[in-house]
Image (cartoon, one colour):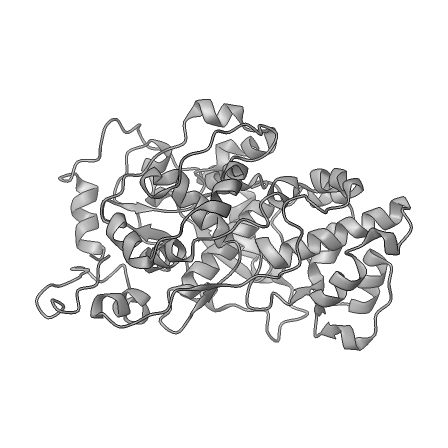
Length: 424
């Protein structure tokens, strides 16, 4: 997507048919096309998460493994290319939850979350009753009774966790205290990395009951929750008035490097076979010379999408392959009030299948506007009852087409449709 300020009166950037891209008037690409200055996105994060597993108490690692967070814990200090993230946000469409590239639509799917982060994508949605005695919940989970000054509504200040759960030497090493340390670490990981938003200086206490029993914690679909949160962050970041995005934008960078090798640093070998595929990018993330947004805008007009092959998939640890049959499921991605639609039917070529003209987007507009403000005691399970029914029947929503051999013809039915519905 180049900037055409001098030609904007002559060239129509599209779309010719505006029935799909309904939010174009407030989309950041309007600024880009008109040549107006738009800042590089700022990535929000909580600063106090140990880099990878360095500095993490060795005794809590079995708890992280049981809860299903060991892979993503290794990725928590992945350094970011904000120019790449900003250029990708310019291509993101909140109407479809896909990037609109010149050749076709593409997106980050449950397949990418499983392979790159090693988070489970099946089982229970991340949703539970909210409300209650917050001080009592914290005391039951972390063993310390807090006064009201440590809370902001239903949120706990991350600074309090940093003071009390950074150095194990401050406590005895009893099994109970180790368990509490693991809960505190996961809570910081949730808010500081995988589910970071504008409130990254505090964390919702509603996650603590989900960490009571780590075996049960591991039965939640944290991968779908993370992808739903990322979709929500990408959608908000496309708004002309927004200048920041959550910390899991690291997944956006890893995804782009794997899917578009031409923009990636030297591809490192996959040697740590007990960890998710994204871990191999850590050293590259630390050293990569970052490019500006203009550089990526130019390349995105010329990129070719690369698929994962079965040889690689078969090498991955079991948690990365758990739910492989659901990678192509059209399902809601739920994390309490966040509900965003996974629409792999729009990107079937990412799974080696023929892409037909997709149906209209599944995402209802009103779901984008849902927040937890003023809804502390909201029963999200009841509110999303019909949507949760779709999640429970997710195996019925797995998409399948015939296999795609060779490149997609520019004269195919899909490409003729796409050219009229996308933007230059």
